[in-house]
Amino acid sequence: MQIIQNENIKRESLDGIRQMILNIKHEINNPLTALLGNVELLLDKDRLDSLTLSRLTIIRELSLRIRDVVEKFPETNDTSIMSYSNYKDMIDI
Image: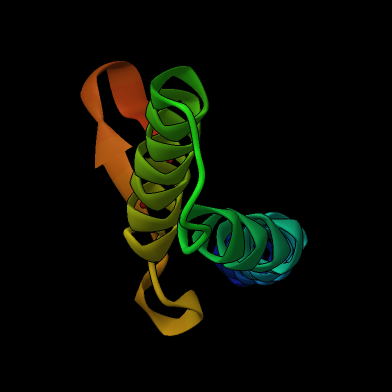
C-alpha cells in the first residue's frame, strides 16, 4: 500500500513539474519572440550609429542565448525522478 502511495505522489509531482516547465517555456518564449522581432526590424534600418548598432546586436545575441537555453528545457515526457546519494530523489531535467 505504501509503495502505491509513493508512486502516486511521484507521478503527481512529475505532472506538476511538467506543467511548470510548459508554463515557463511559454512565458519566456512569448515576450522573447516579440523582442527578437523588434530588434531584427531595428537592425534593418540603414541609418544606425555604431553605438546603437552595437547595443542592438548585443540585445539580439543575448536574446538568442535565452532562446537556446529555453529550448534545452526537457520535453514534458522526458522528465523523471532519479534517486541520488543519501536516498534523495531529484527531478532529472
